[in-house]
Image 1 (cartoon, rainbow, N blue to C red):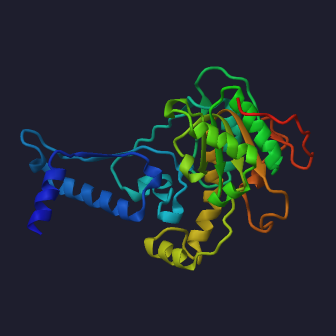
Image 2: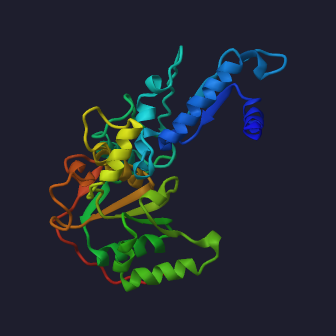
Image 3: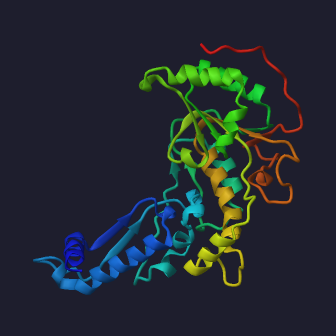
Length: 313
């Protein structure tokens, strides 16, 4: 106990303010620690600093509730969306950072159209603030690994950086020989010359590429009795909801699609298994694709025109 108190004193001595980055990823345990730290800072008052009075403490949280995609490991956007309620204070200031320096407006609008079906902080709307680019829609196609490979190799030969994202690592077993050859070619280059990465949707957070290829829809297909129980104990979810984790995941898959799409700087292609390959009764992110919007080009069911076989240059 004495050592713990000494360490606690050293950590809190210089603090009257806390800043938490990536706040959308916090869990109930982290929130408990934040609240306890604020209480301790407030209780120490004038003794916090020699020569000045720390009569007030502040909490600055930075993040994006639309990028809260780790509910399966305990995080929840609730603490962001209900910030004033979760962290009581005489005053709360909200600053909206709306400039997007990565993607053009069609990429942004397509991703936001999908995620707006999930609860979020009100008043959010991003605008492209980077160099002016051609407005290219998010192209949605039926899953066709040959067509995907040819299009991907074309972008690679054009000098684009590429992210190939999938929901499950088992997708790699379906890669064509041509695609695997490109992967082997790129991985054999010096690190600074590599332009191709293959990752899960979750692992792509924080990354970007000129062209992004998405494999698979976003659905919550399993029931989780244990996690539902943990969510109830943590006070997450709405009162009376017997399955708060499963309910939260139905919204989280929309945020996951948002994160995946917004990795794209210029081009985004979304390949979705044809109807019947997924559980049609379970809501999915692709349900939000709107063919009448200029930021989507939904070509599912139209077939594919094959181009000549391409070689990696």
